[in-house]
Image 1 (cartoon, rainbow, N blue to C red):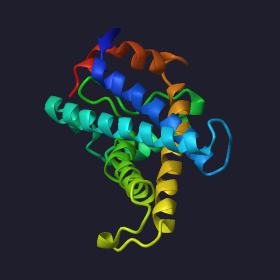
Image 2 (cartoon, rainbow, N blue to C red):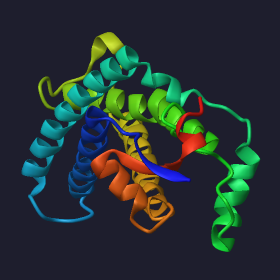
Image 3 (tube, rainbow, N blue to C red):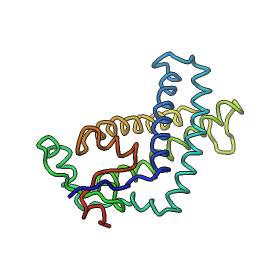
Length: 208
């Protein structure tokens, strides 16, 4: 028997949506900085991109604090248990209406593939994008000269690393948007991240 369970807390949803908005905006302005599109104009795109990046970093600080003070960081600890079944489900099972191999609960919201991907994003991709972005900003705009103390003479490598990390984030977002539609109904996952409530089996809701 299913019942509505409060799965996603208010800050969690705020962080999720703000992060999504900021990454989309950073990607949009980033494409304009690279000359892929024209909307704000180059100088404004740079200014807005930098401004949004500061918001993004502040959000990251609050998110880290929230995750550690609530214990929610444990949700992202990677596990290889059941990961093949999860991959088979996304590749084949999802198109055959097969049952989901991972049971969701309040204390275990992510399947093993999500845990692995989110863990990689949090410890590798996002820190790489943020640190390379900071190098870029503080090299290029305030000083407008080399960072001799760090022996950085060119932005070329930093720009490549930053762009590669940004593309990985955009690829994740595209996949994430698609997977939103793969819940119990087309809009079930979207509704859960808007309201915080999701329909779970009684025994699933209490599982650790």
